[in-house]
Length: 249
Image (cartoon, rainbow, N blue to C red; front, top):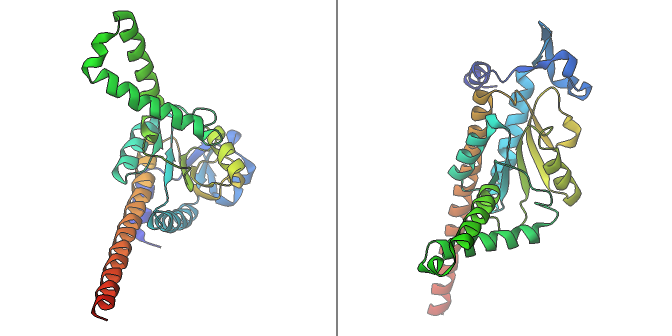
């Protein structure tokens, strides 16, 4: 276990859970102790969960599959958007719309409408509408953009959801489970880890804790995408060599 990683985790407050009165008993294996009525998360378990998640997410990214970042609580929004954009993955940081996964066709239709509205609003066509209709179109655009802009690159269902606080994002977890989509989540002491495929025990309320965990996972995803690019280049080079050999023959 890297002492440097453990130090970073402790300094970020990842080990601070909720008040013991608010705990979920299923989190017992991940709790180290109780201090001043606060549960202390076992950092060793955090590291284990983090390393498993990094390996899995890196593998998913290396196959060219998509990972949907989900974190709509105030402390997570900015980090979720920043880290998802950094590794070029879709995200939901404002509000989870019912049917985002289970009714994905409708979501794609709304994203198509978003692109249509952008073309209208950014061209001279907007001047052909009345002032009232222009105002209506602007309101519609702002609403769709706020809710769905982070998913505009998501042309298919993701292979995995990366979640901050599965208790808060229970609807996202429920939809993923219905469709057999894997879930990785930063899971505090008030959460049910049995609902998550790869739980990472840790403080999901502290901005520093969320930022650290999401940064490390986004790094792993980025490395996986680089691996995918290198593999594709090697395949292309191999194909070129095979074609050249066939031409000589």
